[in-house]
Structure formats: C-alpha cells, structure tokens
Image: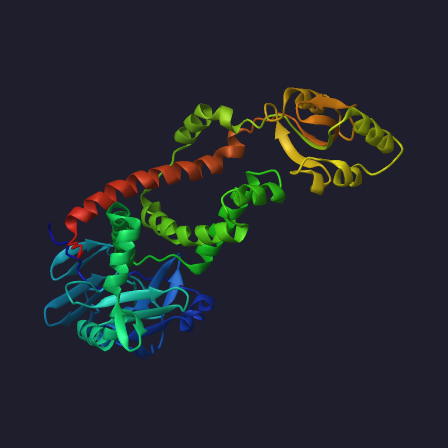
Length: 426
C-alpha cells in the first residue's frame, strides 16, 4: 500500500474578531511536551474550528518566523521545513508544495491566526484536541518515545500475586469469545474512526461537547416521539432488557463518530429545492398521519361483570379507578385502562369499530371480542393529516444530507484506506 503523506503544519486563517470573543481565548490551554505555553493573545474557537497564533506557536515548535511587509508574507523555517503564507491568498506552501486554504490568512489585532492542523509524519509531531478540557496537546517524536518507555506497565491489565497479565491474553480471550470475524469487524471500526479523526485534525475541525449533547438530546426526543406515551417507550425497551438510560448510553457512544463524519463532509454536501420536492412526492404516503383515537378500556371475563361495571360508570364512578380495580388487561389495567393513541388495523375488529365510532369523551356499550368483554372510553382523536412540503422541508433536507454524507463517506473511507499505511498486528 502507498504511504499517505501528510505535511505537518499549522496554517493561517484569521479574521477580524470581536473583543468579546477574544475574551474567551484564555480558556483554551496549549501544552507542548507536557509544558503549558502562555501566549500574549491565545487560541479561540469559531464555527467549530480551533484557531491558534501562528508566530508564537511555531516559534515554540522551533521554527524561525519572519514577516515580510512588502509581500505581506509570513515565513516559518527550520531544518527541513519551510512554510510560506500570504495575507488574502487562499493558498500556502509547505516545502514548495501548494495547499489550498478554506479562507485566506488575516490579522487579528496585529496577530496572525491559523486553524489548528495536525503536525504529522513529516515532523513526527502529534497534535490532539481535548474538547472536554479545552486543551491542545502537542508532542514531539522524542517525547512520544519517552512516554512509551515510561508507560511500559500499560501493556498489562492486572497483577495477580505479583505476576503481571498482559493485554495480549485479554485480546486472545476476546478473539476466542467473539470469533475472528467479529473481532476483525471491531478492528476495522477502530481503523475507520482513527482515519476520520486524523482527517478532522488535518482540516482543523472538531466536534464540541455542546454539539454532542444537543444531538443526543434530539435523538432521544425523536425516539420517544415515535411512541404514544412514556409507558410505551418503557414497554418497548423492556422487551430488549433495556431502560431509557441504557438506550441513552448507546446513543451517547454512537453520536460522536456520526458527528465527526457529518463535520467532515458538511461543506461538501449540497441539497437542492428540486431534490427536496422530488423526495417529498416519492414519500408522501409515509408522511400522511392517519386517523387515530386515544382510548381507555376495561376488560373483564363475563358479560355480567361488564354490565355491573357499566352501571357504576353511568352512576358516576371514575372510569380509571374501575379499570385499575377490575380490568384483566395486564398492559393497561394498572394505568387506568389507558391504551394511548392507535390507528386502524391495530386492535381487533370489534374493538376498532366501536372505538372509531365514539366521540371524544363518549363511553361505549359492552363490546365482546375473543379477549373478553370491553367497555371503551375515547379520550382524544386525531384526524388524518398530510403535512405540506414546507412543513417537511427541513426534515427532508436533513435526511437527504445524511444519505449523501453516508455515500460520500463510504467512497472516501475506501479510498483513504488504500492511501494509508495500515498494519494489523495480530
């Protein structure tokens, strides 16, 4: 396989920034080889991109940085590395090779700012962004070697009576338990995640904690909205041995990688009004909200018992109290007989016909089905409704964006794997 060459630099992209925004700079820390670096004017984040002062940071990395007033060019040099950038120019060079910028370099209060880029294979320096601590960690190749030697014990997972058990034994056990195929799939997943993280760093992008929390919240709300009530959500999850907290933990584990992929491709995705309209027409039937009723019922075994209960209702006894006391339906009895909203084709025919023919607040006569004898009370109704294109436009745009993102990601990940040096060591 060809080795993917990543020129390692921090490149210029700055802009006129408000005093309020600059006041937030101090919240971002920069560490080089374990030592915190102080700047006269520090980093900041804008639109998900981390910006750092070019001269101050590159000087700390050992480059000699000069500004040419005549050419409006910033040049950083050390042994084997030359970086050249010009104000108002969308291109810069690394050792003579031209690389495109999203925006031209600019000055912020007489400081040149650059989006954070990975210092990669050409210098052997790694750059990591910690969103939780809002810290940039830069480590030289020498420090990486020292750290590896100092953390030799990290190769072991447990010590039993002084005898160390290494990670290889744990991995071998995982392969035995999961099987080679599933283990290979997990390794490929780790490879994909690593390649995405590397590309994000190259482009100076990151996913914030706020974006993750917002996406998790929206996903949970979408999931809950697909059910009629919280009780239905709990009952559904219970069938899979989960609680809502368990489901949320799964979502929290999945969302960060999904957001990383979206962040990587969002600037490359375009959704036209024509595409939205075409998708709306093709999926119109799925958008139509069918007629629904919300009903409660009391189910008993005999007609005589049903007649007695119906009389009590007519005499003013509370319907839900009678359901809790008498209903033999295990799913709704303890909830006062509440069945939530349902459409046609869900209930048995006798029950459905009676329920859909009742008005809101009306109570049925005794209805017999193969389950027993029902007394039904309709508590709410929803008429059939087809949302307009305008009402569904944002939802469709989001769905199409996800589809195109998945398509572009699949093409990209296969291509980047062929260009990367990947060695599976087991």
